[in-house]
Length: 438
Ligand SMILES: [Zn+2]
Image (cartoon, rainbow, N blue to C red):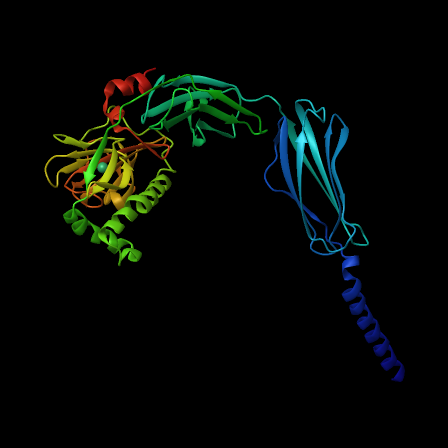
């Protein structure tokens, strides 16, 4: 009996010792392997490519990290890092692979990554990633483009590439407009509509097609085109006390912080801040567009309506003969009778209905491939988001909602999230010459 108790005591002591050993030395004896991940997928390497690798080990920590590139059975070390202190659980390594300096040729290669931990067993993980070395930049084959670009107008470009592309589009100065991929004769082709800035300049404005392949090789080609100057009007608009008193409470109700401001202060706010916010909202709406061209033929212009203001009109708002605010008109104002029926200018899908700040009750229609139309100041909205509308289908009625002095329609066309002159889209010759002509 005594002997049996002794056994139990010895067993308990061993157990306690084992637990203590585990607590103090456990991480030395762990068998968990480190983990290796790329921060983004690496399939191809061009002339130069920066890759990011994330190493982790949740127990004893990382001790040695090495990266090698192997081609034709010849390995070259890209990075070899030792971490003497225990417990480093996460390490990010960023590497620049320069195919020229490493004398890599186009063809297959392997990036071999090894991570070892601080365990007594030196647990090791090896990741071998097959990659393609590819130093040939994509070649752009221009299919169609607008030769004459009007200031404030729309530019159009269609092209193909000699190889698969990861990112492509048009740069207008620093503004990037991603192209839409379509299939043309079973070959992937790219189409982009872009806005020509109102102040575009023959010599200073850069318009380029940009393409980057999976390996990171980039191509930029300047678009062969001529920028034509256009005269824009400048007018002065008197802000009458009556207008401010009548209109500003509508905006004070929308923005609580305007509650105690004078009508003129409210106007200055909505003409700058609210105008900018509305533009950002519109750009967000225009970010997603149908991958198919939905429109057909000339865009409709509101019938029996006279233009009250044109695209690009520079407005100075006057109080007591002093300019208190300025704006550039983003569309064409058209007026006929009060509460006139407003028709969809072309086929498309309704992507926005509702209150849109200075534009009042508004409707936005997506015509595909980044082309949109916007209808503002409506009194009623008679359509819903997601609806496929026909050309000429009634979508609402004109009104004075938003920043409008009298009943009219504010009509805008947008390409790539920027306002352009709608007049070109009302002109069958312009559409034929620049977009639809084979
Ligand atoms: Zn307007």
